[in-house]
Image (cartoon, rainbow, N blue to C red; front, top):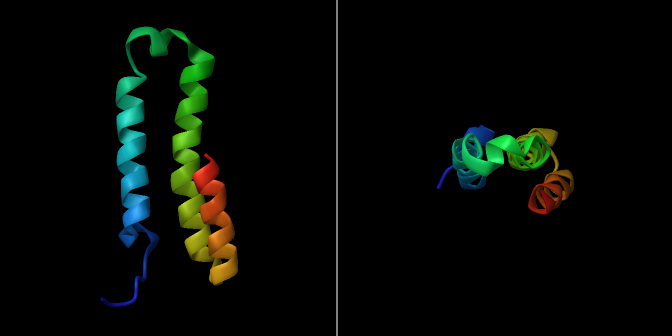
Length: 75
């Protein structure tokens, strides 16, 4: 397996992107759609996972990447 050059190639980021897609899909209708606060909080949390994985990857150091992964896990 070669070196990963882009965060988009990380399986964790790909799974986070799919999770975000599904969350947006399922929170767009029904009772979630009417509960704006909960809907928006869940959506922001899912986007946060993707963003933290990407930001950590771009940081360039393993300890900092690990730190961002811990933050992503918390989201």
